[in-house]
Amino acid sequence: MSAQQRGIARCNECGKLSHLPALNRSTAATCPRCGTVLSFRKIRSLQRSWAYTLAAIALLLPANILPILTVISFGQGDPDTIMSGVVKLWVADLQAIAAIVFIASIAVPVIKLIILIILMLVVQFQLPLNRRQCTTLYRFIHFIGRWSMLDLFMISILVTLVHLGNIATVESGPAATAFAAVVVFTLLAANSFDPRLLWDLDND
Figure 1 (cartoon, one colour):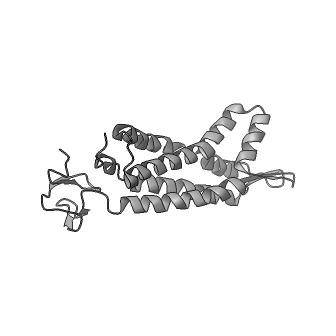
Figure 2: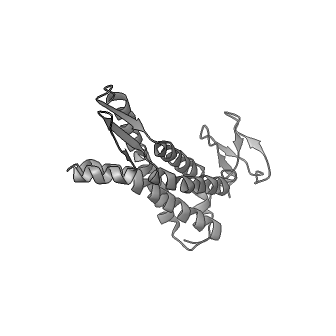
Figure 3: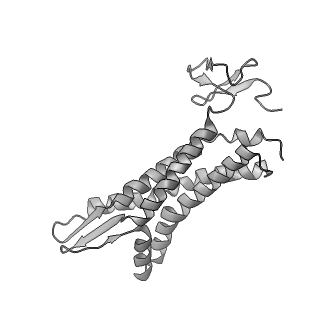
């Protein structure tokens, strides 16, 4: 028996469990501890997750096509996209750094979006997938999400440290803003999705 069937709701802010046997989707109730509006499931979880996910997908293209970084040395420099930067690092025998940038900048966002789409499709169309495996996937996207901002941290450090006047400067490109937006939208999508919806399905 689930907590919802027992009439127990958990506050999303303070975590307090409240017995609300009469609560349903159309009834408003507040947490007795912090006053937050309570519900058995996150309100409009699926709609908000889809909106954030589609916004992140729309920004993936400019994030990977537009230049993300330009290193200007002695007045000359060519802008680099994420992929061209990875290639240059690989050619320069910096395979470890190239792999880290590729995983953090390309692989992680794409994997997170694919998993989120799968989970939302499972809930929306009640696909016959194992709920435990879906919950594991949800925990996985939260685990890998912490590495999404790695290359933006690298850019900010370079822009701050490598600023030597006419000798060398580092400038971030428009793709950095697009990529940061992708990271933020994927985080919002993951946090908006309510994994308890997976356990409301009838399939095992």
